[in-house]
Image 1: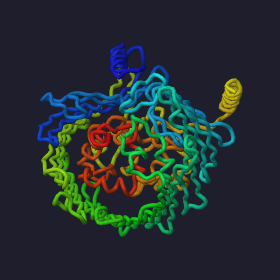
Image 2: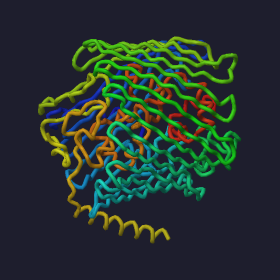
Image 3: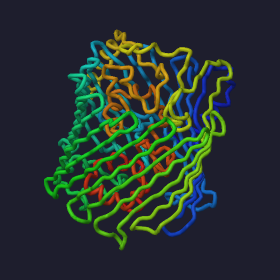
Length: 459
Length: 145
């Protein structure tokens, strides 16, 4: 069993090794969060979080890299702000990566994220994939599943594979399989088909179907079709068909209890068919309108609708705003509400301000209250090219609990350490300041950059 | 039966190994070779299937379909920590609480969701299980044991 503490110690040991042994590029982000809030029973919580992620590139050889992400919390006033604990930590991912120059061959070993077909998992083990001949590809993974609250990991196992076939710019199709065991007992078995077809420049169909091997039934068929009749107009059709008996069939004591079909909240005989239509229209360069309509049709319950529209306005890169209004029209007054949002942001040189307002108005009041609202004001300041400090205050209230005020302060620092090899690491040029989305952009290397992609429109 | 399965697996592995050895496709790079705006409109440069990766307003709702087919495309621009902002195992901070200063980014459960989730969970509980089934469920289990 791999313990979080062991991995942290190994990583620290790794970082303490003389860097002369490697020509390593190290870059990452440190995000320190401080939160001040009240609990439901009026206890004051002051948790301090540290989120750290980094990558070691060109680790020993150019094909190798190491990736780490994790966080830790400590309550400054020794209260137990979450999960009955005054401190906590989590290793989100930590893996050695081998990335070959041909065949898109990848091997990840450690605590690895896996996104392949039916799998969207975190695994203590391995993940590998490769292109094969004639447009075929194969991926495989295996190890111990990473879950929030597992009873014991001995006997837990997850493994799976995905085989794909593609013809670039025409279609991509994959067949995938996943098997999970809990304490040695078969727990989860899923197979799936994922599909993406582009018959025309203006039309794209994509989606997936998932089959539950334990209940021998189709869990879900989820598909979208995009139609682009003009450059300024996008139309998206949605279909999502779910069998509750099969979709919620894999439940055990580690699963959140509300999903257990046996407790009477979710009806195992229920089948849901969601049909939706979304539109996005660019009114002009700085103004975009969106609209959405979804119908939920059930075999047991009455149908519901969800619909609304929004506008986003961005006259310059440094400022913008948006508004939206949606209506949930459920089966009864207790399941109906209006949802309103207004936001605006502006950057002033190194400083920025954001205002965000939410209000949900319930048709039927709850505890005598009809509205759940949230108003936040955020401000930030770039202390340096790599460091930024920001804070936000939120005033919120809802029908379930009284109003409260929350404070959130964060300090973000991007670092890049290359003691021996000093490539010209350029921060990506962003239309928003780099610190706005610190985890979004990876640095673009000028050395060893990938060859320009084909099919680029040249000037 | 087990022996048959083992043999089949070995044959499959050898076959796959052989086919891999013959594959000569050039790998997608580790990072995007050009600077791109945020959010990126891939169709600004690409007129093939990559044009469909435009990060339009609805991209958050369809990104899953692309990620489970070609995660390496996402990796061109996104570090893994970007995904774990939402796809967490033990998340104690609601994603939107960490990014009040980034209102354009789609993040689940902005605003008060405690009351609202009772309705949304009845209308469509499917997306709830994906994130809060066996992962990221400590807060849920406080009430839904």
